[in-house]
Image (tube, rainbow, N blue to C red; front, side, top):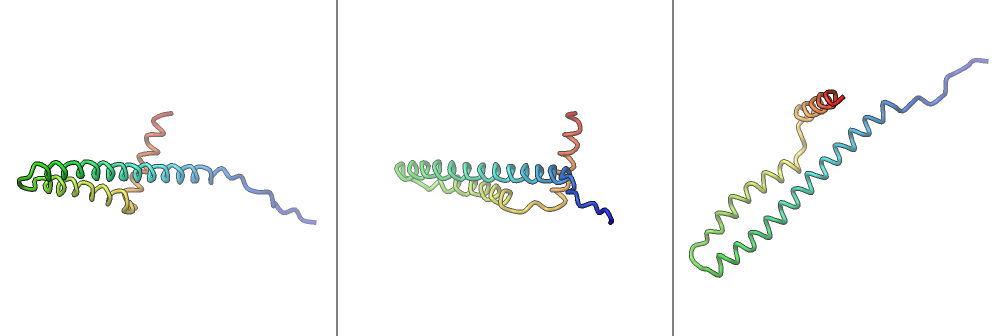
Length: 104
């Protein structure tokens, strides 16, 4: 009779990986939430500015605010929705490990 090791292996290496994935997911959700708040504030403020511009008459100065803030909102959307390049993700992971090591 031969003995074979069929005992389950400890799952310690998988736990940090799962924690890292959870932390990344939480950061992505927080970034998306920040974008939605930005979008809501943009819509509310621009609606008010359009109303003021309409009621006061004159040239449509509100379009400058729409254009300028719209560029910022578009940049925020791209930053949140786009995938992070691998080099940046690797740099973030290295920095996180460095800062965590400094906290010990």
